[in-house]
Length: 337
Image (cartoon, rainbow, N blue to C red; front, side, top):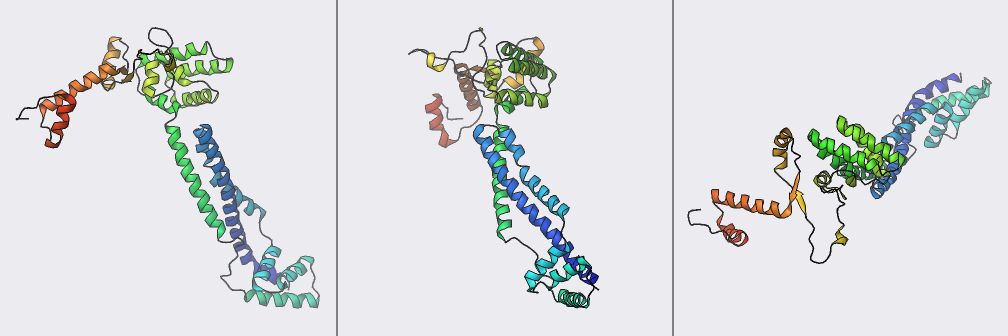
């Protein structure tokens, strides 16, 4: 007779199990999301965006762990009976019946209690809510998820603009001559570095020659975390093209002077990217000449003025811009232009 109570509770027990799993997933996601937010903030502050990007996985990971834990733990008929007793004000009728069934009590009094419990189960509303947490739990999960998403996008953006990524972008598609120069620069830097850094610099040189960008990314990232200035371990033109701080040795073999070392009245050459480098690098490599992606600022400015003058001579300048062009370039436009 008492088995009827447990049989009638099976459907409610299955529903409660999935509700508990969903609640545990939400709580686990919140905990994992808060850990991800902390890791992302630390990564952004410390400049370790690569670690911060992986921290985004803490939120779904925490949700998965919470759900699996709840499913593995399960829900007993006694727990289901206690919940229905509280929600429906049944005065522990279901809990008492389940306990009597567990003890195997078949006395007339126990059978009477079980009959009352079975009748009470049929009176429970079919759509009774079994949720234990309030509406604040999903709201908190949404807020934490938005924070993780925003910080993750920021970390990914900074990672894409990191020193390592900019250097890899310059090396991508570079000629073999330029790769050999970078490799030799890494080997030269290894001569004055510590044992561990020297080993990684030599490995970086090998990876540059092998064009293994994936492993090179990891090696350079470790070097950067250890305090090695990548910009000073590569040739000056490569460092300038990648927008890196520092820069290796100058062409004459001397050290690049620091800005504070200039004397009054002295000028330090400023180099800018040469737009013609991409088009002429292949031709120069075929002749064996080393092509530089940068050129002097004065030379580049003169070439830009010449190109502008040539373009203005080929087409009509809008009337509202003619006065500006005359003053800026000092050109005398004819009436037919």
